[in-house]
Figure (cartoon, rainbow, N blue to C red):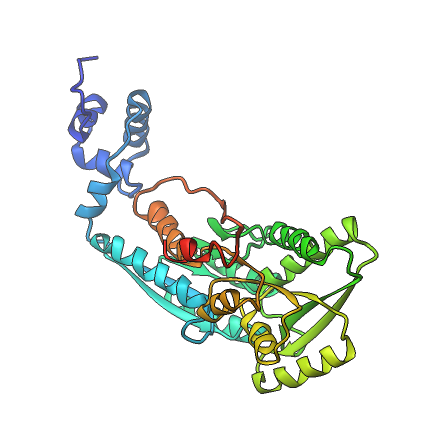
Amino acid sequence: MNKLPERIRIKDIARLADVSVGTVDRVIHGRSGVSEASKKRVEEILKQLDYQPNMYASALASNKKYTFICLLPEHLEGDYWTAVELGIHEAIATYSDFNTSVKINYYDPYDYHSFVNASEAILALQPDGVMMAPTAPQYTKGFTDRLQASDIPYIYIDSNIKNVPPLAFFGQNSRQSGYFAARMMMLLARDEKEIVIFRKIHEGIVGSNQQENREIGFRQYMEEHHPSCNILELDLHAERNDEDNEMLDEFFRSHPTVKNGITFNSKVYIIGEYLQSHGKKDFNLIGYDLLERNVACLKEGSVFFLIAQQPELQGANGIKALCDHLIFKKEVTCINYMPIDLLTVETIDYYHNK
């Protein structure tokens, strides 16, 4: 074999395999129009040389356009998912040279049929890749089965469904997060015999897999370490916020000795603001996510701990994984857990502004 230049070019491979440059290019990029004999010769040479194509340059030279669709829960401006969307748009801007675009669709997190209808609309558009916050596994699977049948890669963010594995998942280990939250709760509660879990619920639906799994992890810790502690529950209305105060009034009238509580959704401010308005300063409250109103409650003292999970980074990394897989043909790590960050009034400013 003749000596090769230090940087191996496609024309060097073509010469060694005795084929045209166009044939090598087709083999490298998985395109059709190559005989089996030629394909085999080229692949043997590529393997011998351990050739790594410059996918970045190839992608820049390509005219192919990549359309991604993200399926997220409906939300108000400033809610948790606003930060996810910010990360999505930042990532798309980063990869704009490669003709990438994104469309964000929404579903009602308290209506499984809304997710099904939104997924049908996405399938009709045949995007190049999909990123979603999955709903209940039995409804998510119908969507992912059809994505797989169409060879469309998909990413999960926020919560993972292990028996319906995606190309990649970005989010917390939700059970571990709940387990950790219980440990923090009991550092505050000490020998108290009652704690309360606050939920936002609509017709029996909590609204996300993440919240359900956090509660499972929370209860696991309690069973293992504090089995005699009574766990109370208060289900606030997901879609009738005006009734929250009345329900909280009734709860605290009925349970005047309860001093510790937690919510696994991103709206701990609902309870925190109630505690402030009622001058209730002897209650330890833990919640999730850095919504502005949550942070305000932390600073005012009505929330003791916030647990954060970097939603903006989840959105950005999900888009990056699709680009790495589709454009640059890179291997993508399947499970990507976000940190479980515990924040207090003393640390929030240094975290929030980074």
